[in-house]
Length: 96
Image (cartoon, rainbow, N blue to C red):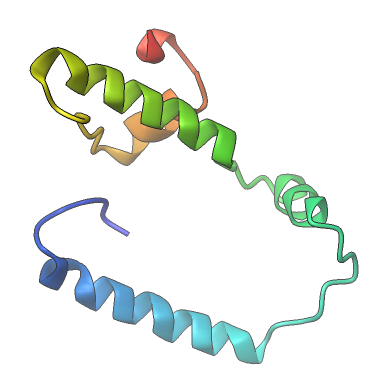
């Protein structure tokens, strides 16, 4: 919800809120008309939802690891959500 901030306790209320919304949404849920795993991607794309898929996350992971290497660290986290998405989607030279 807010990204990696503070300690676990700081984001626990966010997690509780998310779970509450999921449970509420469950009552309105429907069975998929197309059980094909790619159907959800098509469904969301048709509705203008911009997705970050696993391969995109791998790009972000490689970027963070490359940023940490010169400092002897496993990684340097990219915190701003917009930056994470931009890097994951290869929208500029941020991965270089």
